[in-house]
Image 1 (cartoon, rainbow, N blue to C red):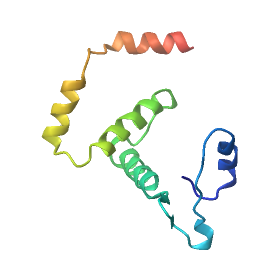
Image 2 (image 1 turned 180 degrees about the vertical axis):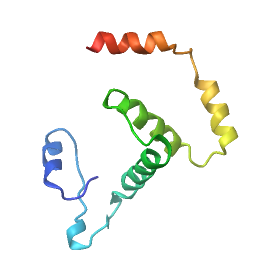
Image 3 (image 1 turned 60 degrees about the vertical axis):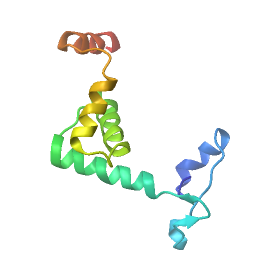
Image 4 (image 1 turned 30 degrees about the horizontal axis):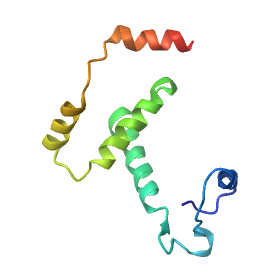
Length: 106
């Protein structure tokens, strides 16, 4: 589900796509809408400004993943979200492991 932005046309080769035409005042067409993704990006932008102030390109995917996790679990209390996070931790990531990944990519 996308709006009518022309850059999304290439997605038609890979995905079935429903389009809502915002320029025509259309925001919902049947079950098609972009409200959820627009809401997520609004939360993500506030995270950048209010929490991180700056995000390195190197770790951008991790920032987006964290924000997606928070967004997808936004109905949980902070304590419950913390419990879910701990329950899903498989191992710790040390600083040396993190920077070793950077060196491999370089």
